Length: 130
Image (cartoon, one colour):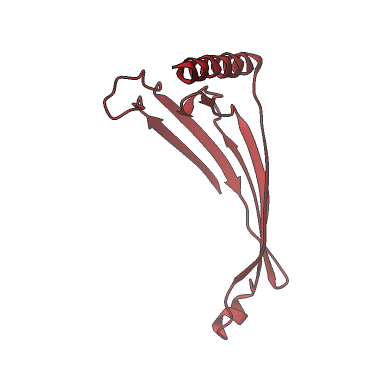
């Protein structure tokens, strides 16, 4: 079936005394779809999801930008999908679960990463000379 998830995270303070500049707030929208097929004695569950559908730029940790829109897909294979076996005491057993994904970083996000890395290097140099 189809699913969606919306989350909002308010600005986050980095230090206990709240003197450092906080990370900006952000909201995310994820969506996906899953299917289920019974084939002989197996249950196949392919799935596909898109995370950060709105391609928001955000940080969970200072100077670590998170990926933009990302696509994931995978397959789960269970043994014992036949209902008659479940009545005999056999249980469903996951015998394979795979997932693969790809995310995209736009040019503006790439420039932001570069500027944040150079900013972090400058801060490190200042602290190391003290």
